[in-house]
Image (cartoon, rainbow over all chains, first blue to last red; front, side):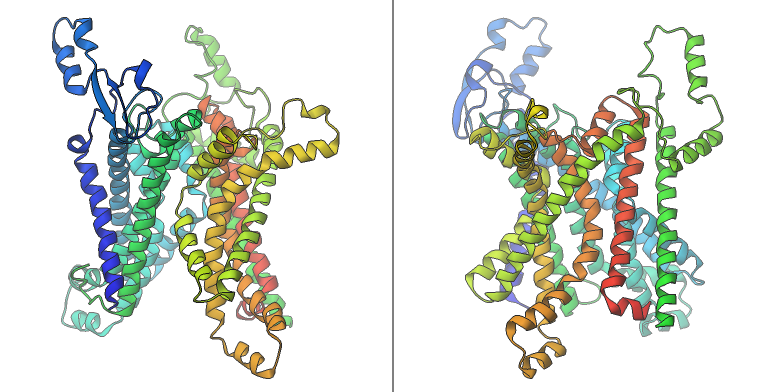
Length: 311
Length: 329
């Protein structure tokens, strides 16, 4: 095993993990409320590392909101604030919004990835293990059908007609991603089905479900890990494109896509608003792709044992 | 030879049949999505104060009072005739609208394809000629990174830097205002200026993918015995490259082109939105914005059809170019 390659890959997986941790911890990590607006006269489009006056942060907003009468002086108590990545056109802190955007992007990405992976693995195993081949044939034709319809248009039509909630986005994006997983898994299963250890298990009278759980699933694990990484990248990208077009996550909820979309209107005055979400997005897709490629190389080289311990 | 043609014919027929089936299922799926969706296609036409009887009459006029299966068969019949009904927001036939917007997308996409193939092939030639040198490493690492950059972000950056900050290229539309009165040459120059940024937006990630793909093809070829043979035969490197290496590495690009068509349309959708390019993508998004059901349905069917037909053409081209496919059927 290539040691430096492993090291780099470990680093990669750490960075991905960090993204997840940061996004889970967004409420703790974010310096300000993502929707809180700074004083618009002084703190609109503050450059990165610049400072401005924050009108009220979330806690103050809540106390003044719950109080029966909020006095003007209480609401507008300005305090000096520093903005690491600047503020956007509405005086909102870009870093805080970015963290929350990462959170919603990864939430949708993980949700769609898990669903499409589950569907893909179940359908792939069903097709690969079918005795007479009829089910296999039928399922693979359905996969072909879904693969050759341009997914983005169907997604757009569905989102346009059914409205856009996070749940629907997860479902729709999962619906466009399961086919490649199913095809890969089926190939693996067909290959494994005739191996000696599976035949031996069958001769000993193992029922199908035992064979699938004990012998097939552990062996397709590397494939599943590779697909899941690729899926995550794809789904995050697709969600960002939809949100960019205004069909995904709706403002004021920040998402990587709609932050870039909003920044287009005032790019000449605030380049930083659109640049940072783009960098984060590219990093996510790049890292997941590289991670998938690394696992694939390793499992092809045979260094990941069947059973796929320690990936 | 006789057998050969029979195989080609069988393959062609099977692929054509498959494509027709796919188009039919796109038509079906679009219909049922639109009908399962909550809300009424006519709700955007009526004011809420309209009397129920008038609404009923209009509904009957549009055939919306008929059973869903009847509506489905009418929809299929009309689709096959190329009649997608009237757009609600534009008040013109959907077919006519698509016919005026689609050529713009095709223009943009073909320029983008040409650019991405030229850049991609040139970069991979650099990488393969300068193996184990800095140039190769730069190309391979950069292409790896660039092909993961989202198209729309590239678009935003390009339009931001080139139009808003530097102001050297126009940021939107196909022509400048009042360009209809310009002489043809000036009009074309104007168009060329407007197409640079959107075409680049689509072409940059695409060329990175082509670079990676084409470099991999060329590298794989290096171990082939026929190349070794030709080289030992004394054929000049130039001739070797032109008649053996390049064609063999380029043939798989045809399939790649077929697969890329979907990506290209998606890219066009996003790019047209950024640059207000009057193409299919913009038409679709405007239709969604105004809840124009017939237009959304028509656009989706046409886009699906274009991708499916593109894939079919790529597959058929492949048999023409690669003799091995012909033999194996």
